[in-house]
Structures are given as structure tokens and as C-alpha cells.
Length: 268
Image 1 (cartoon, rainbow, N blue to C red):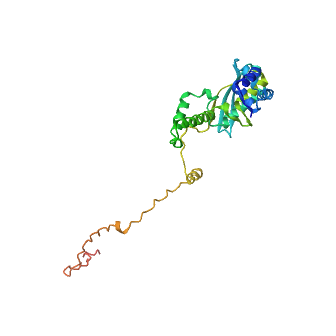
Image 2 (image 1 turned 90 degrees about the vertical axis):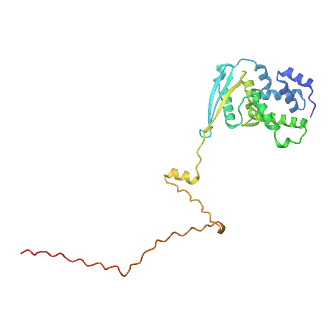
């Protein structure tokens, strides 16, 4: 690979108006060849996108996308410069593609890494510094490893850094820049929100038998608790209950006299 000097990057930047990092990447992809790098930037839509990035984009669309049978929903606002472009099929297709990407990326919460609050990056650093696999490493090595992990984690949270679901060779940032080159207007993904059905609701868990019973209207009998068999050492014999004494009949008890019918006068 040819060495990419700062002078070479500046030359490409002056010719295309693309950003420094984009120029450096283009040169790296094309072994330092200026003409091939210019063509590469044009294919990605980067060169013209940088020139338009400072223009006001106040038109556009707020688009909704429902995925997976209604279990995931996305609202996204994408801006452009004119209403004419906003009503065009090319712009609508871009907005829908962005919404689909958001639906497919549950970890994405921000448009760009630069939008992520500093407090989140600080918290991620605390988590990474406390990992067991870094405990015995020198501080300078530990710092480099942690920084690399944090950068990776923040990119996972940023929409612009995600590989496009329809073309893994493109990032969402490059997809937007291609649309800018085609439509000739500044385009910005302003904000979005992702809805997951039932998110944040505490759900009651049921066993399979209980679930079937609930659907059929049957009652599930509680499973009896197992009886613990006592060991011989722990068996305590219960004291026998006292038996009530029964007095046997004596010979002196007189037999009950038979009842005699009362004498009465017979009626004539």
C-alpha cells in the first residue's frame, strides 16, 4: 500500500471539496492514486456532499415505518432544502430505507457519534476500566484497549456508522451522501425514535400448563408438596392416648322389671 501523506490528502481535498478523513480513506482504498480516488469519492457521493453540508435544510419528511407484524415501529425526520425534493420518489425511498435501518438496529440511539452525551462515554469508560481481563495490564496498554472499546461501543450506538442493511459495503452516512450527490441538496437525518411493543411493561409469567388452562378455561390443580420421610433418629413416638376405664356390670344390679299394662275399667 502506498504511503498516504498529508500533502496527498490536501491535494485530493482541494480538487473534490471532500472532508480530510474521506480523502484519506479514498486514497487508502485506491493505493494513493488521485484520479481513482476522485472517482471513488464521486461514486460514494462524498465530494459534492461536503460542499452542501452547510446549507439550511428545513423541508423534508416525517416518516413512519412498522415492522415485524406491528411489534416494532419507527418515526424518523429527514430534512432536505426544498419541498420539491421532499415530494420526490428518490427522497422518499431514502427516508424509508433509513427507517428500516433504525428498525433493524436495536442498539442505535443517536444519529452521529458526536451527538452522544459525554456522560455516556464517561460511564462506558468506567465499565471498561473495571473489567477483569485488564486487571494485570500496564496502565498505558490498558488505556489504549479501553479507548478502542469505547470507540467501538459508541459507533454501535450511532446510526451513521451502521452498515446499510441492503448493501453492507455502504454505511448510512455514505448512503445519505450518495443521495445528496444525486438530488443536489443538503440532506440531514435530524431525529428518530424506535418503539418496541411491550417495552417497559412488567409481564406476568405463566407456566405452559397454566397458559393452556387459561385458554381452555380449566383449573390447574396445585402440585402437592413432596413429603419428607423422617429418619429413624428423628422419629418421636407419640404418647398413647389414655383409655377410659369401663366398669363391668355387677351381679347385684337388679334386672329391669317388665312393664305391666295399667288396669282400667272396661266400658260396657
